[in-house]
Length: 242
Image (cartoon, rainbow, N blue to C red; front, side):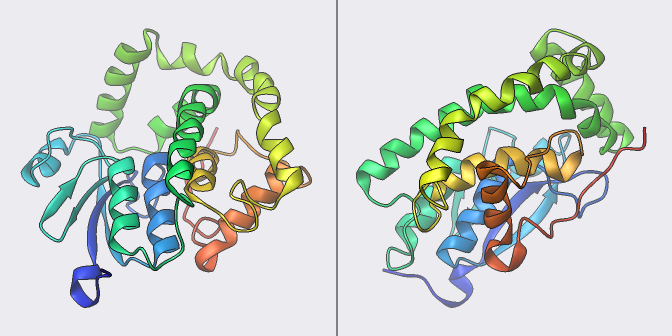
């Protein structure tokens, strides 16, 4: 049964930079596009890395965004949020296509997170740090250096090598987009939003990762960005002075 009125407004914590208008998390971008796809209204609350207690207060323990509070329930990751949107409005365009499509979407998720994100991160990691306020910058540096096992500058020095690998990694995406305007075919599906959001992450925070609009994947990035009144295309961006 579909939801209407005030019930339709979800409260979603959305990772922000020092400038609250700059929202750059790829996981949050998936959610925004999924909400627009399903016609679900949401309030996107700016949240920053050091504000984990704000999320804990909502009843979650993960302490990371996106986190959604909707109709008395808490959803603490993008997959759970997308599933909730799909279940709430079955009459709206499907995010996954069907049950098999939901399972196939898992491949795009894993491919994006394990193959695409790691190649983008070295190119933008110093831009992410620069986009944060002083306290969040210190947290980001300490936590990411511990997670990645190297200073941020050493990670950033790998950018030329990692970006050189990106065209080969994107070959399957390019082949698919020569067949159809979207991964989902004639219209986008959640798989499109997952892959798009990796590049929107880079676009919102940096000029160092670009898809050539003359390529199939670059044209597709433009098409997805233009959806829903230019939701992705018109998003505020941060540019580091260097």
